[in-house]
Image (cartoon, rainbow, N blue to C red; front, side):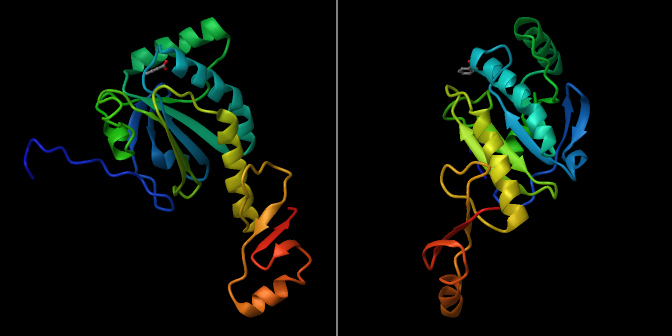
Length: 216
Ligand code: BEZ
């Protein structure tokens, strides 16, 4: 390949193993495999000591107890040094009274950011975009969210996404648009004509043979 042509980083894919990494963080060295057995939300932010990122860190810290209840760990990342991260989380605690309970990767050489396709050169060559990777207890990528530099993420939506993933895993169902815990879920459509006939009498809330809901 021409030395001037930069190879595009490959992006993680849903349903495939998350790229393994080892990284320096505010909680010491961390490897992806350390999270095996837990759900993990790995998220990137553009830069320490910036306002939107600060609101996001506060918001992630606020949902951390709810995530813990669901067996979910958080890990942040930016292309900043550990010293910058330490100073920033101390600054957040001083200014907002919120302690950041999760580790933050100092990815100065962009190693993890490149593995996960977090840098969008069209937006910034030196900062990670606002990415969220939901990785399940088996290390498989289950969801990805990419937001631009200028839009802070909705952490209630991230909590809802975790609830949806855990509900669909537990009950082998799917969740409809705008689903929230307590709402009915979608029963997978039948795959044969016989099953379609049966579905009409199965006792679900059925609109048509392919569209059934049930409570879980
Ligand atoms: C911010 O967090 O405020 C921010 C960071 C990078 C670009 C734009 C906004």
